Amino acid sequence: MEKIDWKNLSFGYIKTDYNVRCYYRDGKWGEVEVCSEETIPMHMAAVCLHYGQEAFEGMKAYRCPDGHVRVFRTEENAARMQATARGLLMPEVPTEMFNGMIDRVVRLNERWIPPYESGATLYIRPLLIGTSPQVGVHPSREYLFVIFVTPVGPYFKGGFSTNPYVITRDYDRSAPLGTGCYKVGGNYAASLKANQWAHEQGYSCEFYLDAKEKKYIDECGAANFFGIKDNTYVTPKSTSILPSVTNKSLMQLAEDLGLKVERRQIPEEELATFEEAGACGTAAVISPIERIDDPETGRSYVFSKDGKPGPISTKLFNKLIAIQYGIEPDVHGWTRVVID
Ligand SMILES: *Cc1c(COP(=O)(O)O)cnc(C)c1O
Image (tube, rainbow, N blue to C red; front, side):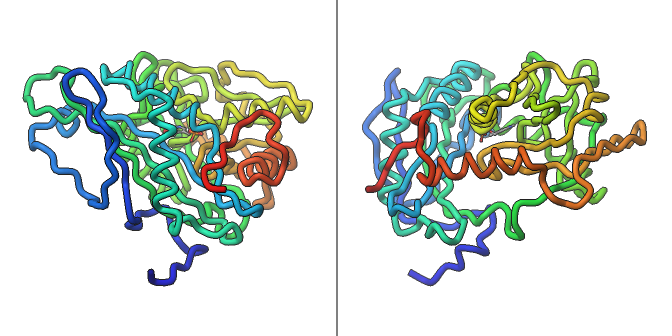
């Protein structure tokens, strides 16, 4: 195997040795197959290609300083993928099968799990697609569930730091009664133009308000939002955001640290009152927000003047990664050792 510069890996794709697959036919899941082929032979009329009947998930495997390899709350991802499957009329992948396939694909690709010191991890990507050929808009009869892994570099190459965001009113990534609460590719397709626009303006990401009233905070690109003020962790309650496992975990840790936790609608103007703000998700854990600009009103909500994340965001970030890496006691039972 050629030497990999783990530290400088991007969030891209590198071929690993194996993926695991399972086919759903005649109303049931078949046997799990181990595969070394990267491509999926598919009918050109497959439902997923035309009508977006697909769901995905994202997790990481962590090589820990104690030598074990751990995964984090994968049963939450299994439950979320089941919710997505119900939302798109796809068959649910049972949690036991989901976890079993994760453990298997991580073990099969052990040599691709980056060393602890690099800060890099093995990204785990489950994908569920409707594969039956048809041109009518109906749910597929047959499905493929595949999990592949690929090493990804550390999110913060120059250390834990803040980023600027811009509020978009010209695009919505999801609607209140749409698919925003499901982890599906269609939401990402809907966000590409807004994301390109934000980058062109020099921002790291676009920031969404609720699609209906354009009054309340929804999501920061493809990450959940949280704000900190008066010893309180505040995060939006909305039907059009994806329930993030990271956010759920941060809410628990905030409570453990003695903060109050509020999940409620957050009017845009309230941004002015937060002492800290962050975007959260598996990729970054927390991506602290430097400021959020609103081009329509000319307002700029600033959370960091020196590029440094706030003290509570930093504490939450350190606490969560310490649990993921088996450094701090896992009092909530969130991790599972996959390789001893
Ligand atoms: C995956 C995702 C998140 C983050 O969820 P985690 O479970 O924390 O990784 C947030 N928002 C969107 C739109 C997502 O797709």
